[in-house]
Length: 131
Image (tube, rainbow, N blue to C red; front, side, top):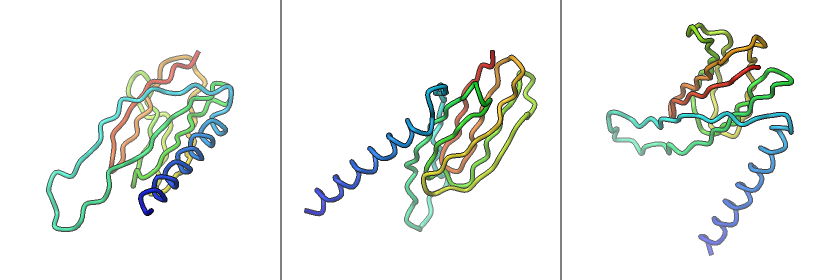
């Protein structure tokens, strides 16, 4: 009975997150493909380890020039937008252990920008092309 209840809760949560993801991303948004590297603790501790399960999706809205970052369980996280020379053109930081949506400004000047997500649980980056 407990397993059935747990599976039901997981299904409802997944459905809710998927519906919210589609609603928030909007029709003009394009999903940004990310290269993700999950991070694992280098030194084992005597304490019970935290779950490294996380959720991460990014959508770029070219009408608003923003990147919407939907995430869950990332911990302390820094978000950066880098230009072609590697200079930081936009950044924000957050702490999250629940589902959260962050927004970061993307420059309106044509070019390819790199979005970097650096957190306790994952290092990820993706490219945003502004035309």
